[in-house]
Length: 210
Image (cartoon, rainbow, N blue to C red; front, side):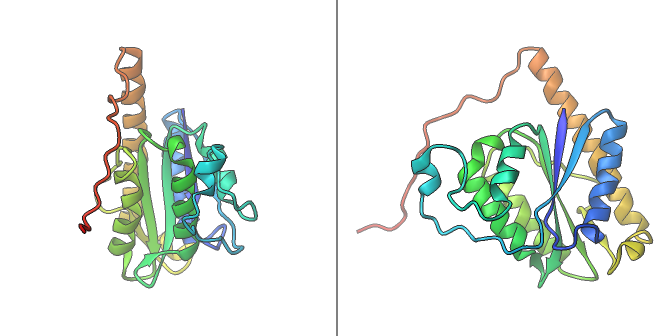
């Protein structure tokens, strides 16, 4: 089993990374393989809703200049996900927002029915708003949401300050254990013959009436 941890901070080894490392350490102890994938500091194109990904039928975005398709490809072999983001203006970073918009639009099939979790990092405020924002990718994609003993946030302006947030780091460790427990439970269910839920044909209702 493998968990892909996506670092949505422009800083590769900053506060968000420190939180992801704490989660990954517990997962590794539980026998779960991990990979921390940094989306990079270069600009990431936002989704323009062109539908090119669907027309191509290849499960990837038509824009190839950034890290989105790399992330979609890595998601194929992952059994669970942790998305990490710094808090910018009480929201997730613009980079990870653009990244996830396109990754889920073009490569959604690589995420469905796989557990997901979010961690956010902030100096002081806005963490819960960013946390709520990112969890919505899971709840529209048939993904079990992994919880912890508190909202998954860490505080500090530098990785050294994060080390002093003992409660935040504990929350990261609880999250890691809960993710491992859920992944193992899903695997045990598969071994017992429990498959994914039966899918219905998608119904879309337009609330605008002529």
